[in-house]
Amino acid sequence: MVYAVVELGGNQIIIEPGKFYDVNYVQADPGDIISLNKVLLFAQSKNFDIGYPCLTNVVVKAKVLRHLKGKKLTVFKVKPKKNNRVKIGHRQKLTRILIEKILF
Image 1 (cartoon, rainbow, N blue to C red):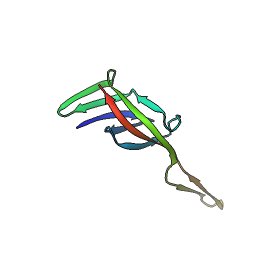
Image 2: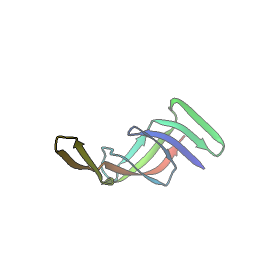
Image 3: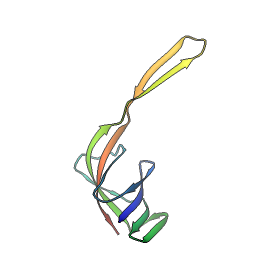
Image 4: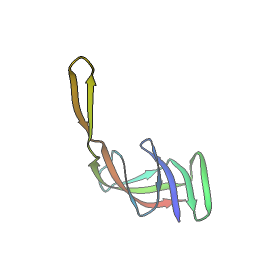
């Protein structure tokens, strides 16, 4: 089993080749190949390589599948005793990426 931990968009994600993940918005067109260089950990069967802070010899190739929006969140703000109520919504922009290969 091959997997890696990468930092992408301020989050650390455990990834495996052949699977897709929804991450924070990446500015690339659908169909583009992106390389993830901030690899924090690489594991292959029982061998582990841990970076301090990153591994320089491991690169992850991922393909951008599409851009989408996350689940809608409702924010409701109330100021007590002022009759001030504000209701707004938010949808996070996401990018779906497919991990093609992890190059060691």
